Length: 392
Image 1: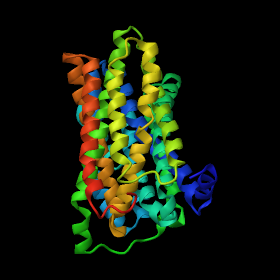
Image 2 (image 1 turned 135 degrees about the vertical axis):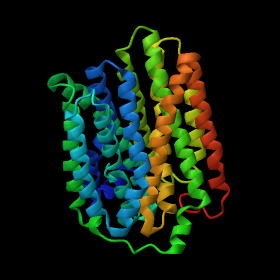
Image 3 (image 1 turned 180 degrees about the vertical axis):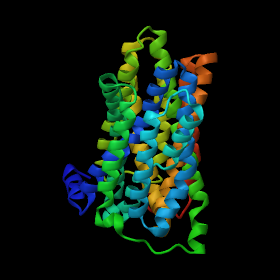
């Protein structure tokens, strides 16, 4: 697929609107965790309290996401997007104002903000099979996953700038504003308002297929590896007396993902069950290389290399989820995928912290490599399945 094909995808009705508005709507996912840490740690001096509030937020999003997705499939995407956007905005505003020493209210607001997270990414991804021709879906999912990486480049930068200019509560208010404007604007599109047929018992059975379980497991393992790398990079920078380089190092990693997503999506025939295992294996190998870095200057190009397969891998995961999802349960399937990713990120951060604390960042990166390679081996089941024709 060429750049001309990319342009044809972007000219498809609704695609540019959905991508642009969902970029705004997805920004809070890359902002709120850091914004909570900033506000609570500055107010209490305790990173443990900050981490606890962030964990409650993530658990709320992971636990309620599939429920919200199921409701969206039943009553329509638009009312759920608008209702959750309003509830989430209110919760984030409360979170920005509640005294940080009022632990019960703080945790309650964090839990509500997580639980009310609008299913922006899930809703948009559920629409690509409707709006984009089958032979171009791998490209649009690659664009989608690259867009997701862009939010994780922009989001933390916005938090840092807004927090330094306007105080520690301001990034939470900014997150609420981005989420509300992006989600409500997204919901005005006619495709978002279209209703899928009501689910029936047979469709519910397909929803929990073994192939979907394999895909969710692989996604969780891959993002677990990401979480471990995050911690390992920060620890490596600190050990080399270059703590200020941590953000730039992680930004280099994300930039590598952006480049990889753009290049991979332009390849004809890319994506699907055949591409995913080698991409995950490539990630595992590149993560292992990170453990060989002797200093900060060498780590930069290694992180750029390690990022190249991230967006392509996630693009394949999303495309396969779109293939597996029944039309009447598509938002719920993508919400389960989001929950698996959130759970993997939380587990990776926790495991990475333990490994770095007790063993060292080099071992942390090797453990991340092992998780990515395990994900690759798990997805081999998708290639062996004769029904994996789509995207195979």
